[in-house]
Length: 85
Image 1 (cartoon, rainbow, N blue to C red):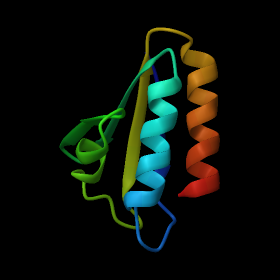
Image 2: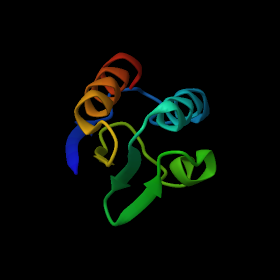
Image 3: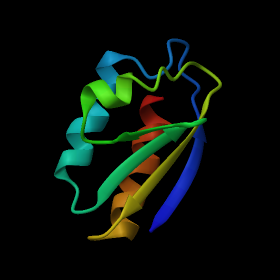
Image 4: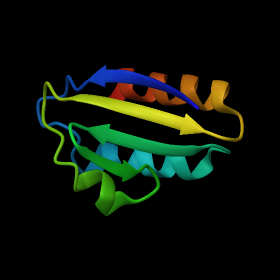
């Protein structure tokens, strides 16, 4: 299991468009993806679960990948967050 933390920079937080792209990416990976914000957690492959976290600008999100090819999955997700959020 590997993880990283990212503080959301986007003015509108983790809204529908980037959340949809994130879920699509998570579904393509060989690893299980989990997002956590505060006390809440969500499966990275569920759009409503990700949106349900209610992530706003400035929120620190912990992204965890487990199983499969963790190293490459982690790098792809880190790049996604930097480029989109």
